[in-house]
Length: 66
Image (cartoon, rainbow, N blue to C red; front, side, top):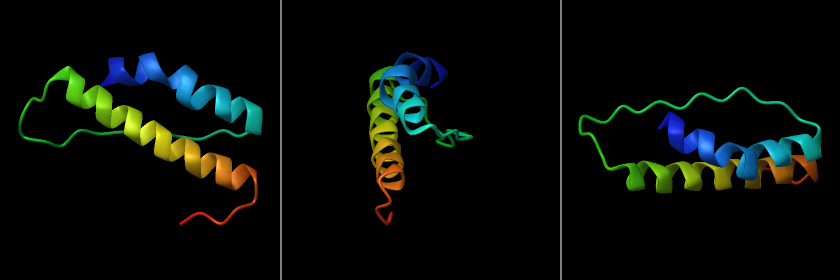
């Protein structure tokens, strides 16, 4: 999970935060009982970062967030 975040954070999160002059504290935990393949973790992490980016963009543009 850390590797998936490490590889995607710059493109999908850090650049957006710098452009919006924002800082966040982010913690992600895995609580599943099964060990899932890396491809599943990567896909879910990408989805999480996209959703977070959408919310950050909305906040930066003064649009109410759901």
